[in-house]
Amino acid sequence: SGNGQHGPELIMFITLYFFLYLLQCNIRSSYGFCSGVLHETPPDLTRVFSSGNGQHGPATLRSMRFSNLDKSQQPQLLCDFLMEIGACSTSITDSAQGTEKEVPIFLEPDENLWNTAAVICGDHAVGKNLWEKCDVSAHFADSADLRQIAELVGDTLDIKLDYKVDEVPDRDWVIHVQESWSPILVEGIILRFPWHTDDDVRQIIGKNKENSVAELRLEGGVAFGTGEHPTTQLCMSWIQNIIRNHNVSKLMDYGAGSGVLGLSACAISSSLDAVGVDIDVDAVRIANANAEINNLRMNNYLPPLEETEDSESKSILMKGHQKGQQEVLPEGLNAPIYDALVANILAAPLVTLSKTIAGLVKQNGFLGLSGILSQQGDAVVNAYSTFFDDVKIAEELNGWVLVTGTRNNMPAEK
Image (cartoon, rainbow, N blue to C red; front, side):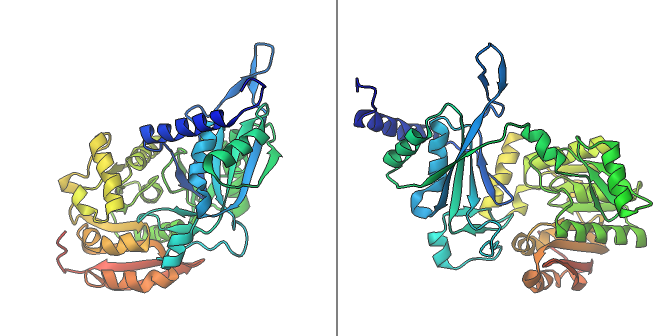
């Protein structure tokens, strides 16, 4: 406005520009669900700033945190806006994280929560999780005027927000995270990632006094499945018992994710062939890469479209089919040819898929299902009792259960 101050004309221009931009891009965003945090980052994740001598060094950052936001304060739109005005990254976290009020909701919540929740995470495949209030954090370069940014946010979005500023330690965050993530030993199988050394592996084996250990190398990526969750441990224990006590030459890992379950089966028995299925094209790619790295006989595919009934999962699967980057499960492998089938997904999709899964297991073949909360076990048992004998909750661990059964001769039309 000529005096070095920003007047209402600038605010109006920025507001108009921002909302036109959202319309043009159909609210461009790249949210991902991960351990109670929603993240958004720009394409360049390694932004650097000039250090004044022509050299580029690590950026000095400050964190701006808006706390206890409710639905009316539009936390996801706030993240978009902060990114557009120069944030290096943004994240949304549950305000109740780490407190007694932090309660994951894997079942259908009541209608009032749907209407008042600040953030709803997840979908039919991974389960819904509602946050009544959330915190939004944004990282800005040290040179940014955070007071002016706060004023701009309040004026543009017409909301009153309190915020706190923290200094961000200058460190290599990739190395920091890697150092805190040791190799994982699960049911006699050690899972290691690319940054783990042989000494890291030996230390974990030594601490657990394991004599015979199979090793899997897993690439980091977007696919679920690192071996730490109780459901993964339940499934891996079941796989070991089935393979060691029965003649299993072909196993299906349904909802394979990173492929950790099918690959574990192959690592236990060198004569076993595993087939993995997942609706996520990236998961299929990563699972196939993990099989190649470990030189194990596991092939992973997208399922046929007709096998997915709910709209959210079908939308994900249709995108994968349209990309054509990964192969769809061949007809010869989409048949009752498997000696054992393991599926570690959630109860709702397991119930929906009961006929599909039954149609893949040969008569007298074995079934192992998890991703099921204790209170959901009976519903899954009932869904599979038509096609399997002796269906039961075989084991429980930290509130999660394993359901097992043996395939009978009841036809399962898909």
